[in-house]
Length: 452
Image (tube, rainbow, N blue to C red; front, side, top):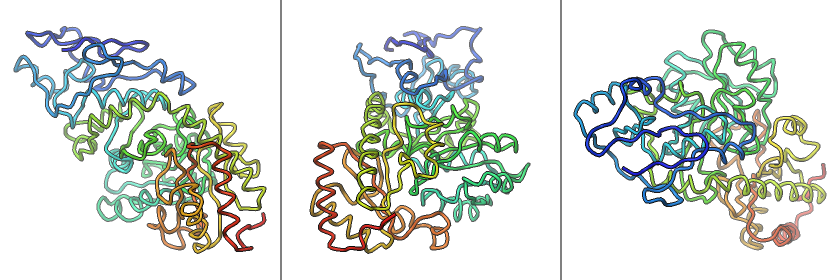
């Protein structure tokens, strides 16, 4: 097998020999303690990523090799029994089957754990598989979740429709900014999870993570935070959250070409999710392909640079659009309700997020604006998702939040004409701003500019 070279934190240094499976008697139960290597937490995500283990390639390449095997061999029959018994595992470089653990996917997990400052992380085939697996691991039949009423539409549908029908798990939705309402909604002994997004989809409401963490922990719940909208900008685990989730498909990937997710949290939780008998990840099998994990591992090192530019441009566009009289929602603006809160929680130098919203009040006006921005001036694309190098635009009420009914959308603050924009960084800022201005002038509708 290839020699492992590393820098910084070193985990699985022991390798099997060529003739027999090599292990010391003193260490044989280390896998039972933790099937995953753990990361030391650091205050800044960029520093933590720089100090994470660097996996070199099989022949000394600066990039790690891709372990594309579905199954792995052993040299001695007894080794397989011990692996299935949990005595030997990936922390010692013993692998069974890639649905369980794969070396390439495991390395991406190390990077995600470093990014979010958690002990461990496991990467999945999609963001929704990460969300559903965590909730199913933490909640049993009869369990209860308290969740923000402003969530991604797919998550809202999972909690509102699928879980009650299929799993007998119910959810109480609350205004996550009303801390007293959150506290009152938690039923001690029954509520297992307090769930919200660090920055809500699509309304860009910022959650008070430290305060919610205190409430959740006082009531004995596990705090689960979706940080898809704010990687690098916010670090929920460092602010008190227990579990951090990501749709890696978005900013972390950056290329709109990969579907992937991640669960970042305590090693005890992640290991329980990989248990052969009771683990949601193990038994439901939302396995990430090793080739996808390799691609993503190569993109994470420049995530910080990309996020800074996404955020810089979003801030500049928000300021200029507001001056034109548009109704802009962006946490970086001083009049945003949680502007000061975000400033107090955010990691320095990464801005206020790469998304902004423009409220056109009606779906018809929203669609006209997006039509001109895409088809007349080429400012961006009408498409769901976010974190791409091109600007992506969608009318949330009729797209990514369409799973919610009219009353649920109203409670969540999603107007029919809310246009969500994921701001890209292709071209120069002035070039793209000129394209936006031309689209606005073409609207030919005096009601376009909704004065604040």
